[in-house]
Length: 167
Image (cartoon, rainbow, N blue to C red; front, side, top):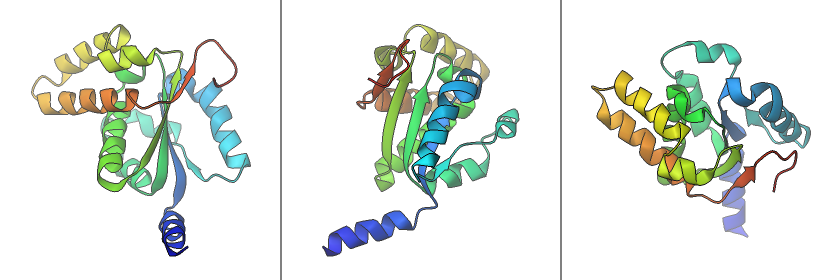
């Protein structure tokens, strides 16, 4: 019973239940908005970035804080998720929290094949070619992103492919 209370106590110290990671231009106005609304309707306190935050080059410190202050992350992988350095930087922080602090991670594969993410094929391969060109002086950053993407793509999640329901 005391271990249950300590777990409950540590969860209650988090500001958010869920950190929602997604590529805004792919899913903000459809799937992610519906998911966010559904989570909030059921009383799950969810952090979702403000659309204006995406305009900057660097990930805002408040996003790292929100990840650290969340019990878990739901990552909505979409067709162009890997093209966003911002999303990949978030993903790397989520994986760091997972490995260092036991942060839970729940992937949703929205019209993408998880094996393309794991093997970094198709559009993911194209995205990383662009990142490697842009960040040619920072190979460690690219490798950190690749490792984070592979690690999360290996987690069992939900695969949505031309279907209105989770399967």
